Image 1 (cartoon, helix red, strand yellow):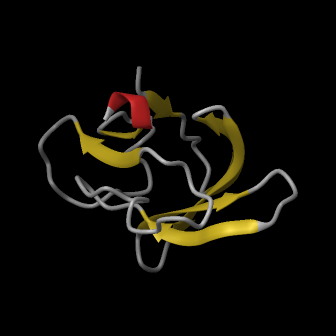
Image 2 (image 1 turned 90 degrees about the vertical axis):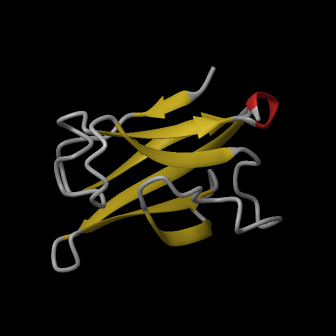
Amino acid sequence: MPIIIPMKDIPSFTEEITFDDTPYIVRFDYNARGKDWYISFLNRDNEIIASGIKLLLHYELISSYPDIGLPKGELWVFDSTNNLSNPGRNDFINERLSLVYYSVNEL
């Protein structure tokens, strides 16, 4: 079953999320100037695996970084309204958008 990643109503926060039985520290940052969300992955020792991946609509976000320690599945931003505009500050909170992870077993 896909993981719908929870978002908070603040512009920068960190969550510990387990993907495919591996825990990651996941950081979310909203850039007000560019009006974009970014995601970063760290290991449990707070070492950066990948930083500043821009959340784009209907685009697989992590498979273009093979073999650096990211989750092996796919991460997508989906729009429930077919608006097709890139993620805004409140679009995850108002449930227009969802950040969804599919494990390797689901692909």
